[in-house]
Length: 389
Image (cartoon, rainbow, N blue to C red):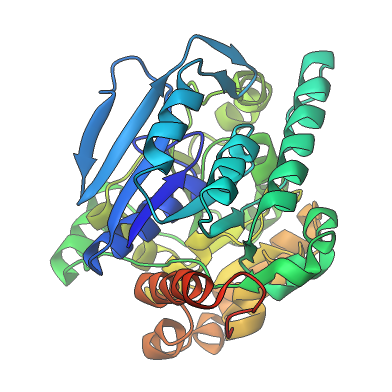
């Protein structure tokens, strides 16, 4: 099958959405499908066309930006050209350009499968308010044109105002989760490199407002009162993150205040992440709003034997609920987060589950197989039948 995937940002940009699509596209290519990703040339140094892990990547040049959005005059031409040479579409929202792609797919009688990753909530400004409304309208139009819409969890589907509009089209597919293998020597070397002696609290994310970094900062004094040598390791982009410069500047005094206890690791490669997770006593996902709908890093950490503490957001709370490997705390509650961190550090073994138990619920191959079955069902039996969940 020839599958056209589309999203605004693709690798090397780092976010949960881009990692999801990269894993899905690569796995589908491994399963014998011809996969093309249509995306933006958000960085002019990136090639317009290249092959990454068996996936063809086509990038449309960007001539202007509106907040995190991009304007790509040639996107429509590329979409038409590529759509004619593919059998199915996998579109990933939020995406301003999705309705045009979905319309092309329906006119060509192709299955158009949307994956709804999260709501879009840009920092407040008059321009961003307009941008939010425009993208929301585009998402609604794309949903109306879609054959099916994929949600990560039933929990998020039941609580999302967007997804509730399209209940009859919803298919729940767990997200793709994978962790590279790290040797005991690599894990020990990571610990020595960063001089980890006391309890270690991890975050793996972009430094972005919706991630709730300030909640962990507010919780830290209470943790340090019990464990004076505790450290936070923050893995992920933290400098010049697109659209988050003001947020980073606002938190800079707190990072300076806790400089002995807060270490930015930067972006880590797959094997480094595989050494990062086992060195944590706990990973935290203190996200604040529905721009976070799951938190892939929770399951990645669990596969390495590390419990998670997550916000009680629809979807985000599901990895803990489904595995029992951690705790869920109220959104934005620093005291509750601190108390949960202290409990997990003290009673860590109570929270740990066998790796096989976690892997049975979440894997990239399981996700790819579910998408493959969905596309084949829609192509073989028409769009009126809902494929098995």
